[in-house]
Image 1 (cartoon, rainbow, N blue to C red):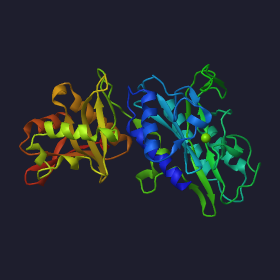
Image 2 (image 1 turned 60 degrees about the vertical axis):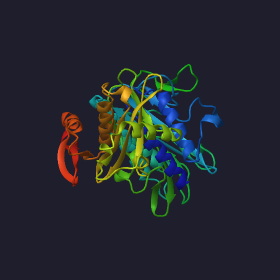
Image 3 (image 1 turned 90 degrees about the vertical axis):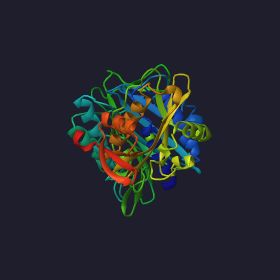
Image 4 (image 1 turned 60 degrees about the horizontal axis):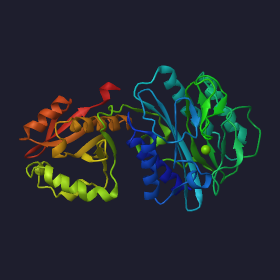
Length: 405
Ligand code: MG
């Protein structure tokens, strides 16, 4: 279940990397679908439950079981990504609420309260306690935050099945229900509303919404009860701030512009992108790293590649980034010749900035060859400053993000 939980967190991470204003929830589901397959897992809801998606994505007043579709994310949206996967016969379940761009203060309070309530509940998942200790801790935290629990939604045991006993409601007094024992694994999941605590189902037969249309938030982790205390399984060990699933993310996506969108690279596209790089990257530019670069090196093992896609699915360019020293480092930015002058480079850099901010990184960095004045001017315009020479013929440029926090 640890391994299943780690994969669950990796899929969340992949979805988060692709969150942007203008992306459709169906595209996000496609991205999750590929990631789940890539990690050797499968969706716990698509086949067994016939849910029309690999993951559920619920926006604003949607409480849960949001069906991926054509809806394109907008600034201010609360986006609840709920991922249930099976890996080698066991399941994990985890959800996070992302805030797209600048949400109003009441939405932000709703999201932060719900996240705090989850951790308050998790802290009571200890041997010897009772199930409703978790319920009461969540209830208290939600009341203190001045929002409401949606009573319709509950946590649950999890393991060989996605939903097992016991049910863990998110309200009520402590010291009731089954005893918690070492080895139990629970999906703990407060679901809240800024208005009514009552829900109704959409005609699609899946999606639950608040009856009064008020915003809803949802956070969930799969947690093991151990003698050393609660162990959160759906997280990434070693990642700063304990992995994305514990943080509400505030995504500032660039607006999608005339059909331009960004998504993760598909493995089968590597050859095509390499050919584009070899064509577009001036051999001189390819020395920007201080030596002539073998194009195959641009797909760094520790990095990830975002592909800029046009309206008809054609690839317009790509950017390869990696995280290092509390910065997002842009290894390579390539725009196809036919698409230059359309602002794709700027859009890609803004997208990188959004990723860096959502990962709470202090800056974004890149290397440019000192005699590439055009590129240096371009990055200056975007707010980058010369930082330090890294090689005899190239400099590191940096844009600090911390001062905007
Ligand atoms: Mg669940």
